[in-house]
Image (tube, rainbow, N blue to C red; front, side, top):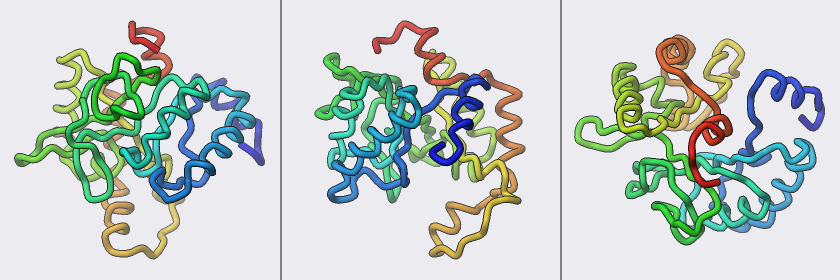
Length: 224
């Protein structure tokens, strides 16, 4: 958007919303990143005309080391965050976190705080082979049986809870994705079943109604 500002108009014109994911995909819990983050969110506000009202942490790196994020989002008039994964993986996750949307604060990132100003939309999770694991997109879309993901979405729907799902743009265009030499684990997570992402996402879009965070908030009586 800095080099091609017309992209912003196209995104908005096509009915999408703008949200923040940091400028360089730096983990929030990187030592000393708080000050840099403030500079980034200010810059992002400038280039988007303050249209961003939502945030997701790179690598879901919101934890009590980086909970300062919530106060900064509130200061910059953000409405929601979606950085909590209520399951534990090797690099992220808050296993005891609430699985339904809740008001989050820097002092309570895992459960509702009525004094909160930011709504947290946690990523969808599923219990699979006796363990709670993420099921809200990305690597898990490419790895889990599609039926497991469909059952997860339907379980959330049955409980009147939005199933929170994501996908990376590069997962939909594997032919344009350069294959970078990575350590074995990172390579597996990045490239495993990459060719299946588009067809699986297409099946989900055909079967379920998806919406944006902002539209969901406008259509539902959630405090914001």
